[in-house]
Length: 97
Image 1 (spheres, rainbow, N blue to C red):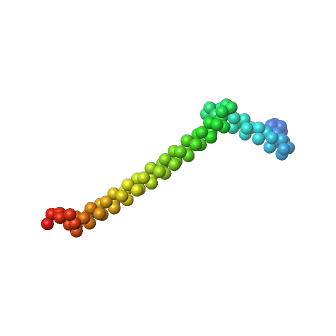
Image 2 (image 1 turned 30 degrees about the vertical axis):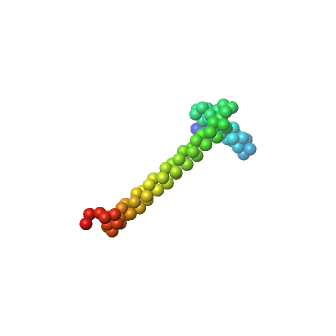
Image 3 (image 1 turned 120 degrees about the vertical axis):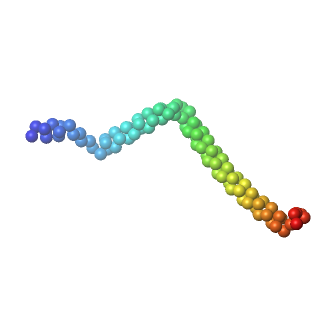
């Protein structure tokens, strides 16, 4: 019986508004701590994050462009191989008889 009373005394009850305020404060502190941990907690933090997003966008654009370039090179190589095969097959330039 005494154990049950002790457990009940440890429980904390809060009104909904106070709980939400407490959770909001804890979330804000956690976010500030996380930003501090990665070095993004100063006055220039917003600028740094925008710069990082810009770099990430540029990197993604470069990856996309590189992929398109590789595909174009493969298609061009295939077309050149077909043309070369056609030229050899039809003996257009007086190739071996």
